[in-house]
Image 1: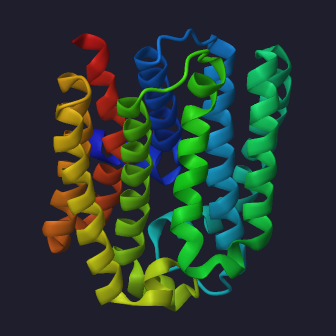
Image 2: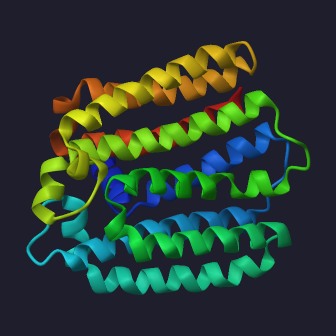
Length: 271
């Protein structure tokens, strides 16, 4: 059990689990929207998500002049050069893959890529908007292939489902910023929590969890039960972190579980 925990912890620090969760979630929505996805498209998605998260952590690690407060940033400080090389290799592989994906996915991906570039250029000025922007970009990457390939207008239940997923991503990031508040202050990282404070962040999380619960009951009248149970499970795990903060704060458990919620859509393929 100790070996499994240490291995998964390393995968989490390297953001490999985040990339895997994005691919799984993209497949989840592709099945819901009844569209086919090409392996190279999914590979490009995984590499892109990993590259974005790794670049973000490397930029943060470089900006911190002292030893970072978080294990993730300390790891990126220690292995900065090696991770830069891996990032360059991933970007090169990604550049090769994008020329073999479908044209519409390439075009929409290019537009999203511009958005990501703008995010990196202005992220120091986003402050309380950082988590919202991050959630929209993450969800945009996950939904890029399914929405690009669908030829039908989305039904109300499907539009609400997309909203629910964006809110899951937003809650995930807000939870992290809420728990990391003191560490982010020491490392001078801007976030919603460092800008708006502990109480306001907590209150916003309560509002978002309540919104998700309302949407769940609305969706029961519109959508498929199995899909909603998966979304509900994702929110329950995130709420567990919120409710038992002190337990999950130990040894960075909140990040392991918080990022693992994006593996839950995999259940849909066994139903």
